[in-house]
Amino acid sequence: MTQYLLSLPHDSAAEPTMATMDPAELEAAMAAAGAFIEELMQSGAFVFAGGLMPPSTATTVDNTGAELRTANGPFVEAPEYLGGFWVIDVADEASAVDWAAKASKALSSRVEVRALQEPPAED
Image 1 (cartoon, rainbow, N blue to C red):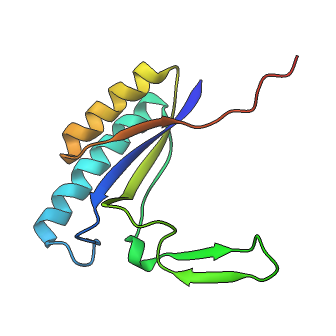
Image 2: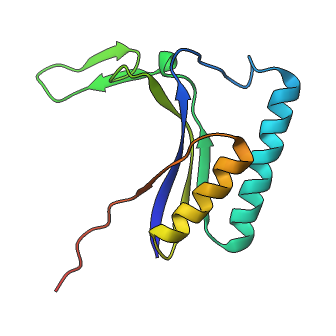
């Protein structure tokens, strides 16, 4: 089995949070996400999931040089950002794409599918 990240892109022009969403829209989104997660759990594919705060709340930490440096904001500015994700454990990429299609339909959002790296097999 391979683990895959199913990620939800958000438009960087808007930084919605659950606190700023219209209550009816939030309720509908939470119900759709909950139903999708329940289906993942029933199938045994669910590993974990999360929703992320907007990039403006990020702190970037760089401790690669002589001094620790921190900066408010994201590492990179982009037209879209990662808003939420699921990690699933399925047999192959085709299965991951099937789950992403269900998530996309349920949440009316594009979903990116990426496999997590695995260490090379030892001989």
